[in-house]
Figure: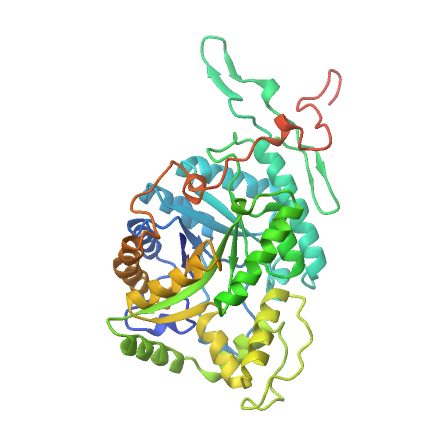
Length: 454
């Protein structure tokens, strides 16, 4: 199985930062991120996954906002530092296709791919929060369809930019005086409804060709987008049965796109809470749940439902009919489906989703956690897992110290790193250059102007 370490602030549980073993005031301290990365590398994880947004989640009051872990350093800046402190583990950088530009992001990621020796991935998010739009001069956030239209163009342009230098284009031949082979450089001239990019990139093609492309949307549109482009998909499910159905759906979509099933690694989010006994682990979970203020839990639920106002409804009553969210359709479907299937009250649902941030929580011994991961993996529910410990870094240390050796004893996880790049370790092929294969459907112009042109 594959494993990613999810650095969701200082814990996968919304109150994880309040646990005595959580790192205090760590979110602006590079030493915290370095400690987590080194722990994950010690545990032979495939990559560290860093979440991000370019705004704040909605909060109805200063009291609710005060209870949230809000600081977020730029993930690319964190990763550039961590690449120098580690030697094997990969890094997945979250960056928005709604509020970035293809050239600047393609350049940044290609740069980190070189700096890290081929250990960078890109979590392609379309952004979901209204505040993000306001930070970039928009009165309203893009609708769901337009977000994915932009994302499609963004990725198409980025791939062309990464391919604008063929392998071997940088010659650096002192004897001949040729630094580049101009026949192996390509103008891009990408023109769409949302982006126009001339190219070529001013960074040669990286060790991986393209960064590993990661996606987390699970709406119908998001799944089709993933089937076209993603190589890792991050998904949240409360049971192996729903996860297995999702994986089967994705394999069907991959076949439609002419892709093999193993070209996309499907990774399920898990929040482990580990203790010497099952009772102790469950007590930790209950103590963390009790630390979530009720207004914060309901505020979190409202956000996941597309900022639907629940203030006029009895917290001890059922969830009312909620119109489908255009912010994150897949999350809306998971949350509403959970409420209906389990007959949860608003308060019960709010605490459930606030506690786990929609991940599956496993509270038990190291063997209990390994048992469940083995069941999910061997039953075809996932290719691996995104491990989001309830509190960090201690929760990750517990997983690395106790669960990883158990998985290794069962023959389910590597005992040493293999290959040179993150692609190698995930079992993903290095993409062929689209300019040499003829994959790009229009001829790019010459890079340099013809005689007489300005």
